Length: 261
Image (tube, rainbow, N blue to C red):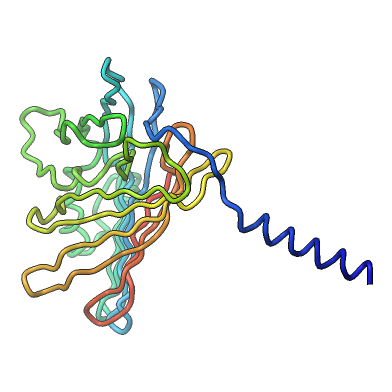
């Protein structure tokens, strides 16, 4: 009987300890040191049931150039690699700019692959600069360093080493805040993010994220993606995260992922 009672008490204590979450409060400000650099991979995977799937990944390298007197962070970024794989409606396509660069020729590319490569190669390794405040807000939007560049900045407007905006208040489990912006690819489409601190450990912060994206001219309804982000507690360095949403046409799901290389 005593052994059985001991086992029950042990199990209860175990369950209680597992259900407890941190009561810590954490400064929300970015704390990168000079010389900070990081490569993040931004990817999208879509499975549309019978229609097939596609996946793309863009590798972005970020280098911190300056921390200003008002605690702003000036970065240089560049797209170092692009991958694309598709099997939609039975037609397979793929592209990896790293492989093409290593071979140093495009002779083995199909006509479709060559067309794709010609569309994206101009963006590879082109340096751009932008500035964030201490909470991750973009206060100077991305611009290519080449003053005469004709490249569209909508591609690079999507990328930041801080892929979320922090609130001014201290972070604790349950802290919730919102952030609204426009889709950098479709300016008329609004996107709203709701962030909630899910847990805080000795070295990480886990943030649940819900993204709501407006419908588009009768073609798409409003849709929601949910997921969780993992962030370094001290510096606010982004470690990994993903959001998943339902595909409106043909079923299936789309997953957006970000992770450090």
